[in-house]
Length: 125
Image 1: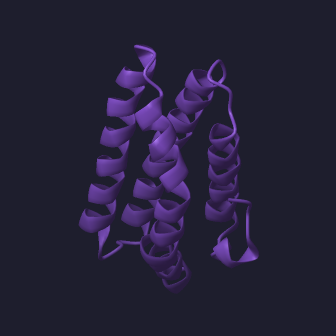
Image 2 (image 1 turned 135 degrees about the vertical axis):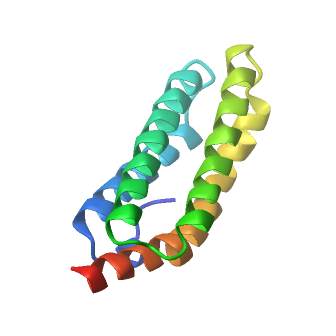
């Protein structure tokens, strides 16, 4: 999923983080079996830091849907943790399938939860 201008939310910090996520997800999608585990670990850590940062932004603007948004983040982090265990034991199939579906999840998450957060940040200055 290459970066698309429609993903821009108008918040430079969020947009830069999202560009990094897309680049990592794209690299993961074409990674060899030898490279996949390290790239997955990199994407997982990026996602953890990304979600922590989003949490700080949500608290800063008193985002009304913080519970729902953070629950979604926890769900994704849990799935990534589960897949990391499988990858560590050499089982890549499920993680590859998950990585393929990340673009659809990302587009939906961005268009709903992250767009609302960006709007909250704009409104609160």
